[in-house]
Amino acid sequence: VQLQASGGGLVQAGKSLSLSCVASGFTLDYHAFGWFRQAPGKEREWVSCINMNGDVTSYSDSVEGRFTISRDNAKNTVNLHMNRLKPEDTAVYYCAARGGSVKSAGWTKADDYDYWGQGTQVTVSS
Image 1: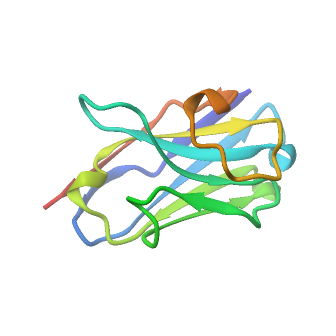
Image 2: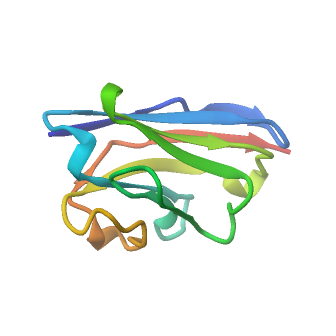
């Protein structure tokens, strides 16, 4: 089981960036997914969650209205599209998957997830 996050980079404030998380070793169908981020010296922070069907999503207050999570089960991929990026969005972004109670998108704690990707760096310059 592996999750591979990609798409990070350096971007100016106000611009957009899309992250992808590709799963291998299992199918996405019966898993909910989340994105987390961790800035230097800070705790890992939940960003967003999407349920198994993709019809229920949730976002932290800090990204609500700017970020969009989506999934393509046929491609075994979960995406995070980030708009109007701010310097405070700078962090390593991680994708994670959980295999139980997957009709919900209310999973906001790191312990809620079973599998983790390796992270991709997003840096937003002012």
